[in-house]
Image (tube, rainbow, N blue to C red; front, side):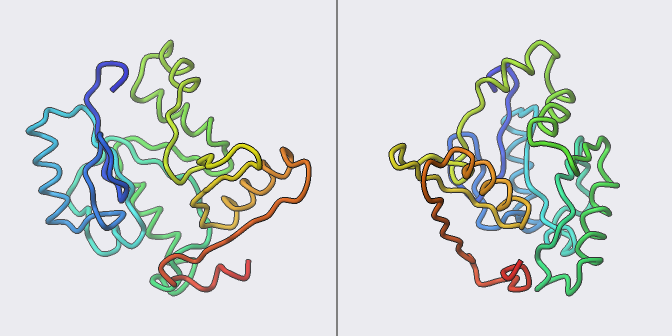
Length: 192
């Protein structure tokens, strides 16, 4: 939006530039309604997360995606998929159907974001954009400075590891971590 494009995202967090959904990936009928609303608003970009569950349940069937971004292949939603193979297959099947792809496995967040932005912005806009990233609620969100308290919705082992390593380096004393298991879902990853 900063560069003259009209964009909104579908999110479980209410915001100015969002279409709210109680599900990460809305049901197909809700998604079609949102897409029609986005068309009426003449959006250039509609951004959403397609969960592996949403994909398997057909919530995005027959919807063409300009760009698909695969950030990781880890362990998640095994309560639904039953095993890691099915989970990975779901993610790979979805990304294969996208017109353009960014495969971010083993890349940093900045590298992934640069690859995504290269599909949407002019080259000279990318660095400026990265310097002025807005804070996303629940993602390395600073709640207090002294002592430093952050909230992050890390829910895979590598996301949690990234946060712990990053903030341990900034710690002068103890690093206290509180880990929740929202929704009482995939219990297989808790031990990890």
